[in-house]
Length: 332
Image (tube, rainbow, N blue to C red; front, side, top):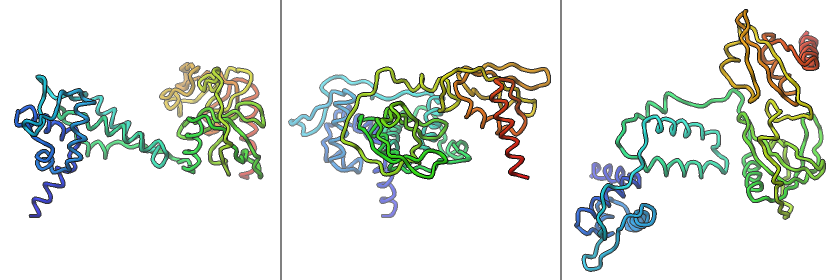
């Protein structure tokens, strides 16, 4: 009896595509199975069978019909192989990596549609390739050293407002400020940049597009007003001159030299779309970029702990030197 329960549990959790393949083979065999028989053999409800048959007919375009004379289903046309999704081992590997990467969206309103889409794809796979998912699960992961603290309700509300073009009102505290300011914004775009979320919106207080960090948003409500984003708005164009998200007015050439201790780390990444690299005789590397703001790249240079030297512009070299001197002063 215990063995029977174990078999039932396994069959009841069979992927829908495998279940529909069984239904297809029974129908093609000419035995005219009905929903009650299929439900017994596959150990599911008749409601599940009706849903599977409808999917096979409407989505897979299989010519299945119910024949009252036989009290069962049959194909009204000749049917060859059961429709399947063909995928290579490399494509499956990429799909598994994508599933791992989706973990950063757990808890947000993106989680359910992403997982639903992933399951629909994987349930349509054939068993023509061999791939040990247990080994894969234990051999690859995505991690971050500083995980962003998210208010998931705020992220969800921002995503829905941007998608539905609904104006928002909230209180926003700028970095370093002690008090928040009331803002009314038209949310254009919610973006995840370097694993952090940012809202790009037209701020009615500043009468310009501003970037907002969701963690600093409080008391958000919809105003009841809808808007149309300007056709000229492009996130790619807006961020073209930034090192991450901060932009300025005038483009400058940034030249930084890295010594041999960190040169390989620089060579192994693409830090900016405009970058150019030049190997140095001492084993170091010179990185050139064109940016419109210096604030983010200044902090980035500081992260290399004296293994980076700013060649130009002079303002960037000065700001790095002053920041280093301040660190020494406060640490002493």
